[in-house]
Length: 253
Ligand code: NAI
Image 1 (tube, rainbow, N blue to C red):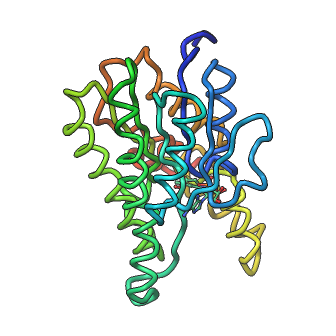
Image 2 (image 1 turned 30 degrees about the vertical axis):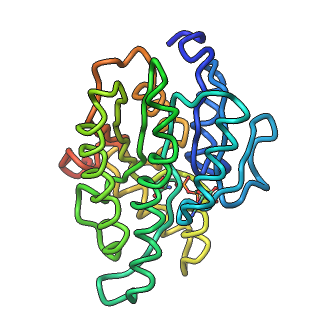
């Protein structure tokens, strides 16, 4: 890909202060986009980008932050709905409040943020939304009932949004990552009884035998939101080391 493809375009990345979001911000900037971060914790955001405080589970907060981005830059062309939180356990593990809280961030958060950006996206000559799902939307994973339900909803929502907004010239796609080496996973490992064994188990779960780098996910997002991908909408790209699609025989020896 060549540098000028995003020149003059304004991109908003939710959860852009950390992990996968921060990698997406870096890649978009490298390729010429002006990037705004919306995050509930902007203390660690790249100081080279404009960061706006927003909690995607709070509509007023999202509306205000998106209005500030529009006011600052005069346009919004790309929205990456990356902010998300985890939940562990089977269906007995979380009460109704926790189900509502996680769904509000991971699913309704995408609807809130996209609705707030919609008037701007409708005016863009190359409007694109990319949602971050998960391999958990596709394969059954143990102790991730609530989280998986929200990510399955992200995939369904992506297709519904793609259908609704195609004729307005707004493309909507998703990326489903496997386990990515971010602060999120570091926190999970930190709370494990044996972090090294837990990391080895996570690596072994992916057919290519390692954790995914955040920049690998960012490169898929970059492709999907690029003005060059004009005919790509309603799709989900797996960046998961083969986890969703492959069944390998155990390695010999
Ligand atoms: P992270 O925890 O490193 O970063 C998440 C960012 O989102 C943080 O900056 C956090 O402040 C922000 N955020 C969380 N809740 C928010 C809210 N209510 N409003 C605004 N901002 C909020 O996480 P990571 O690993 O970078 O994950 C990003 C996305 O990728 C999430 O949607 C996650 O579900 C998804 N994902 C992550 C995988 C992984 O293995 N790390 C695997 C598959 C999907």
